[in-house]
Image (cartoon, rainbow, N blue to C red; front, side, top):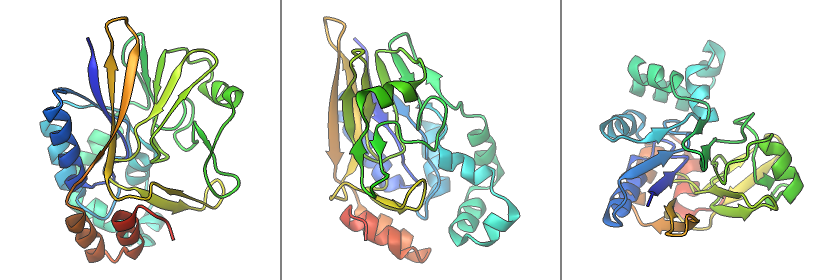
Length: 249
């Protein structure tokens, strides 16, 4: 029977990543799925990269992975966090990120994407037009899948643990974020995402004896103080708040 740890949105938080991997291994998991947004963040990009390279994760790209290697000179100049990330990483991790697949059909049952099958910037499950997250209608999610028929759709991007069963019988699963439990964004509408706890999130996906798939959402304690201190060094007071509280402003 197949059993996976499903991770997303690590955002350079090596402290959370190590805690999640350790927890999953205690539960007997040896197969890890990483749904992108891996190294962008003011914590430990290069150390996070080195750790992932040591482990055999099944990995796809996220929108903020692209943001790193596609950054223009103007974007870099205006973004001290990006300057820190690029200096910390060096060239080899950029090449690695560039070579990550946009999405992946892992097997006949399981499909991986970061946002939607067509766009890594679009939330698959949540509508945030009101400023907070509301689960999309069944048909809206099916439309965003664009004909993707796999039994299990794994997505990330919103940092929100969620499992939605569609009228098609498909399960759409977001494991939440390993590394950042709240954030605010201006696009596509001004909105905030919150988990109300600093605990790291991941999911376990396990095939049962009758060939069905069970999913469990796990919250893991980790060394939040070390992550917060790293964010402080980069003058990211917003991340300090997000990391320590799981709440937006």
